[in-house]
Amino acid sequence: MQVRQRVSWLEMKTFFHLDMDAFFVSVEELFDPALKGKPVVVGGRPNERGVVSAASYAARRFGVHSAMPLRTAHKLCPQAIFVDGHMERYQEYSHKVHDVLCGFTPLVEMASIDEAYLDITGTQRLYGPPLRAAHLLHERISAATKLNCSIGIAASRLVAKICSDQAKPNGVLWVIPGREAAFLAPLDVRRIPGVGKVSEKNLNSLGIRKVGDLAKFDEAFLEQHFGKLGLALAGKAQGLDAGGWFDTEIGAEEGPKSISHEHTFSEDTADLAQIEATLAKLSEMVGRRLREHGLSARTIQLKLRYTDFSTITRAHSVARPTSLDTELFEEIRALFHRNWKKGSTVRLLGVHASGWSEEQAQLDLLDDHTHERWQRALAAADHMRDRFGESAVSLAASLRGKFRERTHENPVGLPGKKK
DNA sequence: TCTGGGGTCCTAGGACCC
DNA sequence: TCTGGGGTCCTAGGACCC
Image (cartoon, rainbow, N blue to C red; front, side, top):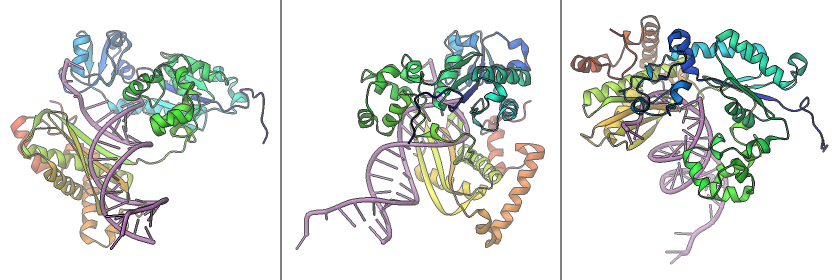
């Protein structure tokens, strides 16, 4: 085996992590330039149940940040402008970003709606050194979207990711190969992807606060205390992708492993009609997405959250995988009635499907005339919804009508037709 | 301050099988 | 008659990410 003493960046793996700055807020500013520079909160009305999806930098100065309850954000910053999210807009701009990236290099992986990894190894002849390449890419993104982004550059995906975070807002940062550990050492362990509130606390209790502290402990010790997470942390403290999610090839895209929808009521309820209408609607939404992906699920899971926030999940695996609204609903309904503490007020309901069958719905459906007819009916319904919107067709319509008359409210709070 | 919604991955116990 | 061991599936819960 040959060991190279000196490896220049020309021969090293080079990754970009590109992250859009305050993405949702910035897109909203494009649609309403009057929002620019002001404290803006995306996620809903200040008195609604819900959390902040994104906050402008002006709002962040008041302590507002994403995942914070909207009511809290309102208290911290009463003058903030609260706007509803528009996922279609963000999706549209995410596609624009993706297009620019794909025109830049073929090895692109969107990690979420507003961030991506690029493998730019070997592009120096085309774009020059990494910093130049990054600035070129930054210009292209800016030209195509009028949005700001930040780019981290490193020899590992992990360090590139941490790097883009440090570069924000609207910056580019390169960690020179070999300097990873030195770059990471002064950062809080919380900056490591995969270390959240709980792990941070556990690490702190051992006196580990900075990545540099972490780097002093050996693998065996960390594994003993933190299991697989500890093993991963040992590598991450050195800036290595080795093992785990970061260790995958860029661009190896796979389908979803699960599909779910859930709904938090604007007011907790024990009304069976409302509960069942909601479960029906959620089942339909899940079924629809299963069919869009051509998938059938073996495992159906109910999520149930009570007023006191206690939450249970109850799953059942069926003999015959399904993507049919009616079958999903019947499973969910049964799970609900088997597990609901009768009379208890419910805060949230969720429907979750997973465990795809290899041999798709087709084989299962062919030997069953009823299923085939259902599938045709659902395909027609999906088509109607495409043309006329979600409210056009609904198996839950009869359940829902009753509730709607009484409360003038959409039972699942979907972005329905505004008056 | 009163806590969304859509995901992924990990842990852990029990059933079941060889 | 004092109790193996590994593999896999199912289920429940929880940490974490955006």
